[in-house]
Image 1 (spheres, helix red, strand yellow):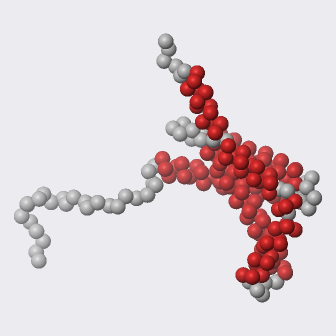
Image 2 (cartoon, rainbow, N blue to C red):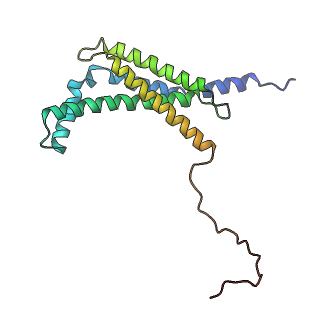
Length: 182
């Protein structure tokens, strides 16, 4: 018989590869749920505005609007950074060459999902589709991809944590009779 990979080993390997996409699909589901009317600025401001007024009692209405706007955009950035990292992880193969195509594929998948997410929002009452949001989403995805690749780089080079330094051996032979004067 040949020394090739048996069919059941290939199936098992395919199952492991598919299992890596489960967190991606779950996270995409969370993003999709966040695109509903329940997470429109009208609804999220009911939580954020009282919180900001409690933290900063003298905050102006203009500052509240700005904080809410920035918080929503940061949330976009963060949720797509996680998606980018998860897509990178799903495409990652230990021991395989780094392959910039994997980073590009992860970014393209995230960009396509960001476009579909904004398209979905265009049909939801109280939500508005925005090209700027797509750009923020893609920037977040790229951030997640870069962070994932950076973690792979650091792990591959052994920069996990530093071991405590052990006592370094002396260059002088033991018992040489030379010691520092006291």
